[in-house]
Amino acid sequence: MRTTNDESYFVFDADGHVVESVDDPDAITYGDPGDVKACSTIFANYVDPDLRSETPVLFIDHDGYTRMRVEGKVVPGKGAGLGASGSLAMPKEPGKHDLERRYTHGQPGGHDPHARVRDLDLDGIDVVALYPTLGLFTGVIQDPRLAAALSRAYNRWLAEYCSAYPDRLVGVAMLPMQSVDLAIEELRYACDKLGMRTAFVRPNAYNGRTLASRDYDPLWQAAQDLGVGISVHEGTGGGGTQAAGVDQVEGTPAQHLVSHTLQMMIAAVHIVWGGVCARFEELRFAFLESGGGWIASWLDRMDRHWDGVFREGDTALRMPPSDYFKRQCWISLEPTERTIQAIVDYLGPERVLWATDYPHSDGWFPGAPKLIEDLLRPESRPKVLGESAALYYGVAIPS
Image (cartoon, rainbow, N blue to C red; front, top):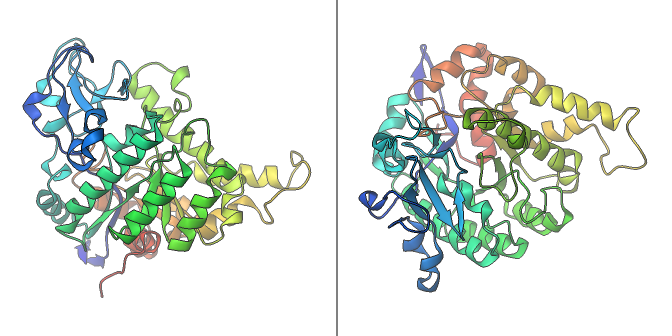
C-alpha cells in the first residue's frame, strides 16, 4: 500500500506501456525505408527462424523520425515518428535530425523491469498493467500468419519482462485480430502458458471487420469462458484501417487529439450498442487511452436512441445501453481530467480507471496518482486509485 495525503491506498496504473527492445540501438540508421540498415526488434528473437526476415525493423527517415517498417508498410505516417519514449513525437526543428529523440532514448523502465519498479516506487504505484508500443502498429499487417507470429513473440517477451516482479507488473496479451481462429489460439496460449488474464485489441477494423462483427463471437466466447478481460486501446496510425477523424485534420497533434477519442466512441457503439455485452453477459471490457469525460454524454445519447424516436424495429438490447456499460465495462480517465468526479458519480467508482501512459511522452510521470487523488472526493479515492483496476484485471489486493 502507498500512503499519500496521510491516507493509505492500493494504487493501480491501469495503462502503462513497455518499449519493445531493439538488438542494437546504434543500428537505427538514416535513409529511405528501402535503402537503410534497419534495426531489428525483439520480434526477431522470439519468432520461428523462417519468419525472422519478415519481422518489423526500425529506421530513421530523412526528416529525423524513427519509424517502423513491416510487411512493406511504414508506420507511423509521414511527419511523425516513434520518439524517445516510444510515443508519437516530432523533432525540435522540422527537417533536422533530433538524435536525442530516438526511440531508444526514453525512460529505461520501458524495457528494463528493474528500472520500471524503481519508477513505480518513486510514483507511489503498487501495480501497473502493461501495453505495447511497437505492438500498437501491428494492425497494419494483412497476413494473419505473420500477425499471429508477432503476437506470440511479443507475448513471450512481455511475460519474461513481467516475471521479474509478477506481483507488480501485469502483462496484457496482444491478439492477431486478422484471424479469429488464430486470435483464439493466442488467447489460450497467453492464458494457459504465460498466465495472462487480459488481452487487448485496437478499436479499428481489422481487414474490414469491426468489433461489432458476429465473426468475433467465438473469440468473445473464449474470453468469457477463460475469465479474460478485453481492453480496447487506440494508437494513432497503424490500425487495420485509418483512425477516425485523422483525414479531416492536419498535423500529428491534431490527429492524435481526435483519433483516440473518436475511434473509442465508435468502439463503444460496436461493443455496447452492437450487442456484444448483451450476448456475453460476463465478459469485461475496458476503454483506454482516449480520455473519459465523453462517456456520460455518449451513453446518454445511446439511451436516447434505444428508447426514442430513432429506434426502429426489434433490438438485441433488452435494457438501456448505459446499463450494459455499468454492468461490465470500465473507462480510463487521464490525471488532468477535471470531470473525473462527475464520471465517478455517473458510473460508480468501481467502473472508473486512471493511467500514467508511462513512458510515453504524452503521459504523466512522476506525480499522476497525486493528480488523480486531488480531483476526487475522499470516499471515491480507494476504488478509483486501485480497487476498480484490480477488479477489472483480476488482481488480488494485498491485505
